[in-house]
Length: 225
Image (tube, rainbow, N blue to C red; front, side):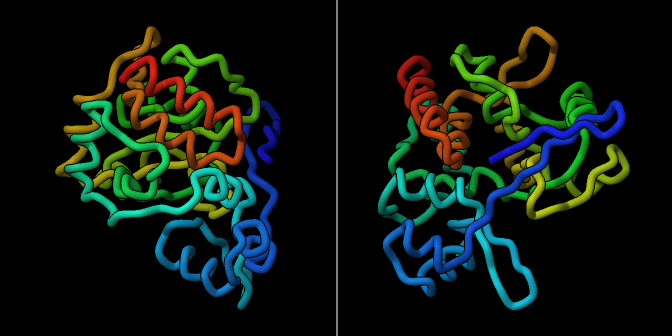
């Protein structure tokens, strides 16, 4: 569940709703140790509180939806080659996880827009799906952006951002040598911001726990494949 909060005149997006490894294991039908392994492998995001771990409910629901994953993850270059060609398998989304290393931040909507307006980032997620013509609501949705590793390392000099495992500004960090592929595959929206290709947006929507986003992901591939 994601909530939009107003602090003065600055808008922030805040993420909530975590579940324990035990609860996640019941939802997934696997052991708690298997959930721990998924977190360690990067297949599920995890947040540590002392000696205990928790995972976002949305991520658990998304994994329930796609079922068993098969095949080793593709390298970043091959992933973006497949994305550029619109040839991705939404049942096997973990194969494409090297499209960007996920880092979550707390930052204002204005700061995120500054990255987009400056051409430092490529928009994905719900906002990009809407730009591609999908009928979704952006109210309360996470902000999902692709950025280069070089940009990520200098992020604090560009915007006021705090890395936060519960934050709902998702930066998908791409290796610097792959970043030109990402920019070349992106398109420009009417406001001049860069939009990720439909295949990348579809993969990112599959990380959501909202069934409407899964339907939109399938629609994106069908209309842009």
